[in-house]
Length: 366
Ligand SMILES: Nc1ncnc2c1ncn2[C@@H]1O[C@H](COP(=O)(O)OP(=O)(O)OP(=O)(O)O)[C@@H](O)[C@H]1O
Ligand SMILES: [Mg+2]
Image (tube, rainbow, N blue to C red; front, side, top):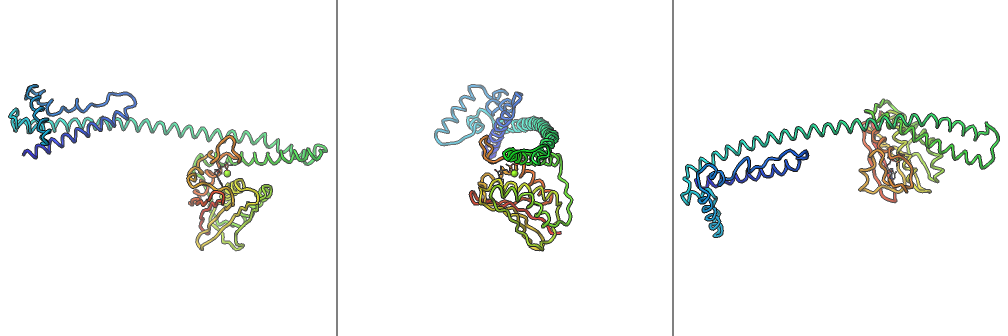
């Protein structure tokens, strides 16, 4: 019986500690200042309980506590209830009854506490849900803004482009050698600005929802040749060798040719941008009979392992400083990832700093 009693008292102590821990947790989440629960108020300790119910006097309790302390000093760990029984201040029957009552009170206190906690959790969930909705709205505003501003930028840019081409072609009168060079630079800048704006428009239009792909048998040779045409001049300007590595009888793949072109466009643009003069960029493909592995490989600056997770975050560049050497908005890979995922595939990346990088992904053969 004594052992049972001790066990019950131990359980109550444990429950008491659990309540205290819960109080700490609730206090920590109690951001709006509502009064937290105090377990001692919900559930008094045994001595207080006996005192409150007139079952012992203050003197008797102090005496029992002092006795218990002295026993402890002698290495005997006796519970207060047992001490009160030993000192014949409380009968065992009364003690049993009191402990039972305490258990019931404790259970009620825990239930009440749980209800409060559940209520708080529901409140916090609603707050988080509201914050999420606001964030999604904000994101939508951002995308709309990008889309609108990009379209607005394209119109005047088209005029700048048209007139600078006319000027360069001397359609508006003769120009000298220096003016020709200057216009050439203007034209190149206009083209890259136009490309950037088109990327923004594509990103915004695909960021609004799922990217729809029209998967059809696609001739990879054709896609690669177009990309080669788009990039060869730029590679030459950067003194890089751009080459295709694809067997002439490469089988058709299942893809959306336009969106595949957009994705590879981003990889190639990066490969050329992040590779120093005299380096190499390869656009290649391999097949294993069921799938094609498409890859863009460079001998560029590489990407440190611990920064790979940052690459696909929209508007994020590894060198985001104002003194950064490379241009861009940090959208390319985020966009490419969505395009590749729309093809039910995922981008693989191998990279070594100062050695080079290889982006690849698998697509099924048609
Ligand atoms: N081939 C690569 N070699 C080294 N670093 C790369 C390579 N490709 C991407 N990165 C790193 O990943 C970052 C994100 O690339 P991403 O294409 O998303 O943006 P960006 O090229 O900087 O800008 P944008 O593509 O919008 O013009 C780059 O800024 C660069 O730090
Ligand atoms: Mg890029």
